[in-house]
Length: 365
Image (cartoon, rainbow, N blue to C red; front, side, top):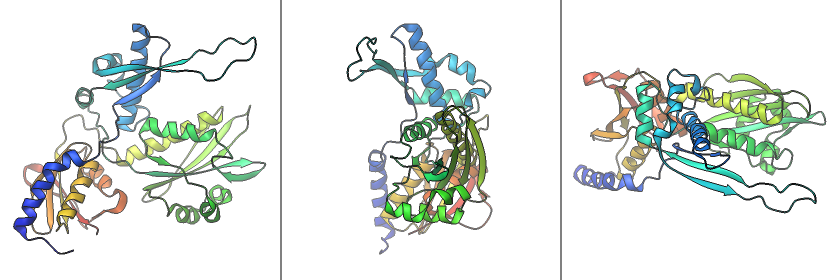
């Protein structure tokens, strides 16, 4: 693409920035949650709001054990202080009841929206960083035993597992996709491949799906017996293996997904420092058109941890900007590498004026 003259490029870029904040899609709402509630009494409302706040904290940090962090139990006791609004929802039970059965009662829910600024401030005071930037997309291949043979999960063979997996991923804020299991998937991968840990076959089958991380699971068990799961997380570097067990299928799936989410948080989530972090400066090379600027700004806003982007300079064919409290240079670097649009350049991250850490990337066209 032909480069723009410097003056036109600068004017066009500034005009683009004015409208970019409104044009960008809203990030997934990590600050709201819905939970069941027994009734609309004040006591029931307090307990349900606390449960909703706990779920929000897990999503915000990617840490399923956030409740064990010092200061969080006290924070949960004040859950109502961080509510911006709430409303009730009633889910009616469809269909009739068998003769002689008691009528089934509708299920009540409370939908709670928490105040973003207040929650961010409370967590920052505890030294807990929030993970509001782009998260790695996960493709899951799950195999289980059926009549002594391993089979891959699909909507027909083990349908009860799918909502469990989706809910567990949603609870931790993990972007999860399940394969289509159409003829192409069936030809590319079998349950035996997952069972034997055929890494090459798994990676080749995953190639048709946009993803950053591959997760595989081998589930064993039966009704009335103990269930077990062997999981492998394929990220950059060595695979991470772990096992989880439970008294039923739901429990073993949820525990496995929680552990996978915790591992991803260890790799990609911003670092909890206990104090406000220094901004991270990012220099992006090969940014020479208005379209390139738009793409880079979009990437920085999405993956900078929700901390905002401050453009410091626009040298020739480059962009120099600061990400606010990014939660640590390593976390920012790993997040920016997701999806493969930005390529890290060789060398150790530098430190500029006033202690600002600097990362160097190249925009891939």
